[in-house]
Image 1 (cartoon, rainbow, N blue to C red):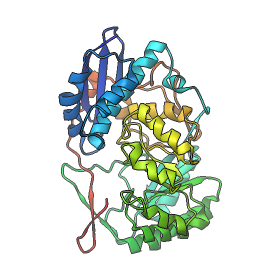
Image 2: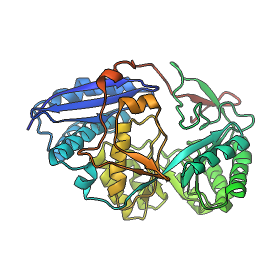
Image 3: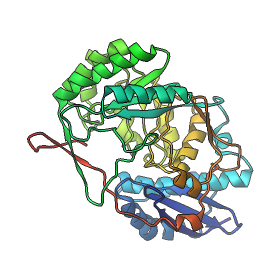
Length: 402
């Protein structure tokens, strides 16, 4: 069995997606996601110019060997562009292998560890009152876990407050828009949101919050301490993870669970955080961390230290990644939770899939492979549109972490 062709499909049914489709000489094909929000064309170029030519003639059943070829065989390794290209190939190869075996991917990984995958949705509002109302709507939909974000008085376009009611797409302009940030204002306001949420809905539902790399370690520790009475499921990306020593300081001052890793590319990004037990949840994604082949290694390392998975699942990841993530979540022993930002109707039509939501859980299907396909004719009706993520500045104009 040989790979005879591969092509990249770029489509924008509400946002941009990069899809790799690999064909074999036996008529079986598989698809993978290589989307990198705001940098899609960089992945396209890497796939078309550097990866696809190497794949032709290879045996698609040798998933591990091909992964090592693309990673270890490249002198300049790692990074978001390279690892997303590798992930796109890896997902497509698992899809092919599942179709060949007549089995869903989770069976190839080792079978079920659970029946359903608990997911969380995104509730947001311009102020506390709107966010409280939005959380109530998610509860009515059956969600067991909800991420809550609120606008903050005096901060221009606070992170997490989206334009849609069920999904949030931050890449909003052909050139980066400018948002604002003020840590003191956020620290004064965010705890009031969770005080109101617990007073309104009690403690039966899991609540999450995303700091989105905005706080210094000391500020992050302060926020975690203030949120302890409200028993958050986790506090996410509360400080940039480049300085992993910073998480020691946060750990010393708060017992609020910590989650990080949606921008991690390899096991080396997470190794020290896991081994030193500085985080509780690993947020690495199938597409960001080089595919299922590599994400399994991160999860296995994390399991030794009682760190659970909490894969990123925003709308900047296509249904292909979501499908693969659900097969991974269904199998992985140390599962924690899965982010689930619903895609638009247009996106769902371009990427028909067999996973479904019910009463706070997502369920992967039983179709051979990962259960997600692409309608190429429909995809062609949504051409690529340049879209950047915003940047953030403090009130004095200083650049800050978006």
